[in-house]
Image (cartoon, rainbow, N blue to C red; front, side, top):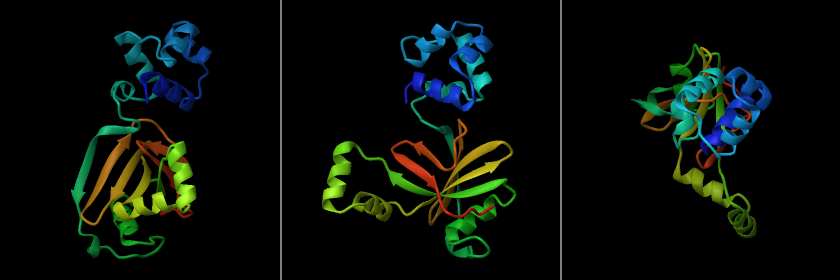
Length: 191
């Protein structure tokens, strides 16, 4: 995402129109439109003010990353030591639940690889869903969206580790994108 796309998305997530955002920033609506269309950049003082107002980091607005904060915390786990119980449908569910059992919500996620038009046509012709099936075979990690203390964490659980990144922008658990993947909330919730 470009700076302008990120700015527009963060403004919408904050529930502000261009006019409202411009008023809070003490700039013209045309300045906001210019920044959101990548036809200009705000100065450093405006950049700091908009990040604070929208509840995102300056790094998020300027970095090439989409939603994830740059820092990922990885901790080793022994997946075999976790047991399925309660709402946990897998050992990976149990590992995430054990780590974040005091969270406000834990949403298991279903991951889909985003495809361009040509890839969608080829997928349909060869066998619908084959690209995602092959991607799932390659990457057996489980993914979760954890909400805790007003933050959203993106969690990846593999056989050997649990990796956590804080989301820079609040997302809707029903559907959001990270990089080349689309994530949707599973039909169940751990908390």
